Length: 287
Image (cartoon, rainbow, N blue to C red; front, side, top):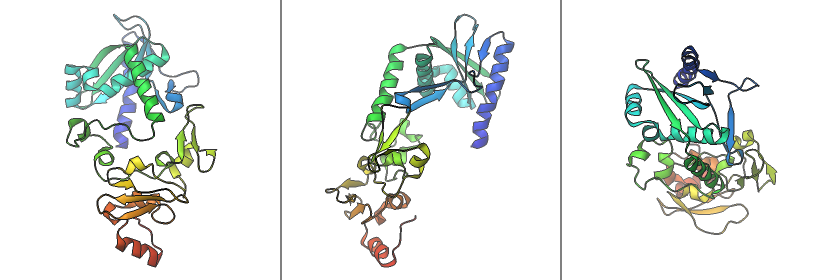
């Protein structure tokens, strides 16, 4: 996977050479030698442009440059259907970049990893769509729970290849970090700032990844297999395991968040046998 990602990075310099050899102007880096960066949704969203282009035949003016690699099937589908239809994420990415940089168009270039064939598409700026996408990001950032599912059926095509299918449709539990904790909040001032209500402080990116022992899951993130069943007391959140009917606590008096994340079978959470072993041996769930 690392080599696959590196292949994509390596192609960027090839694209730049091809374009310059063809007489186009392309700027890869800003004055600090870094890729051009953009931010939105109060700094909680952002990205990096592959470059900015000018002197594109038939389309005068500056372009957002976006370079991609694709296998043969994906490449051919993109040629046939176009970027917006076949690669809507790439299309949305370019719309946001155009909106934030003021460039009114984009150049989308794809190389076929199987045979080195090249594909080019001119992508015009769609202000309404760009604003809608940014508004969607802001809505997600400020939401108390996960967004609505694309489909209620895990067999839906859009769900089949989603990295979060197990979390959305099945009994997987999210990772324990500050962003899954009910005490943390993404703030709408600052630059991607997160705060912790429990400890009354801003939390750095490193702290967010590690979380702390006071982590308590946002209840909606467990909704596939557990529901909140009572009032929170002393930081202990009561739940009912919907798969077994057993009661359990997310907190010091029951199961810590790392234990819930680690459980390979959530039927063990709240089970009488598990509770007995934890109490008798001062044990923790680790898998």
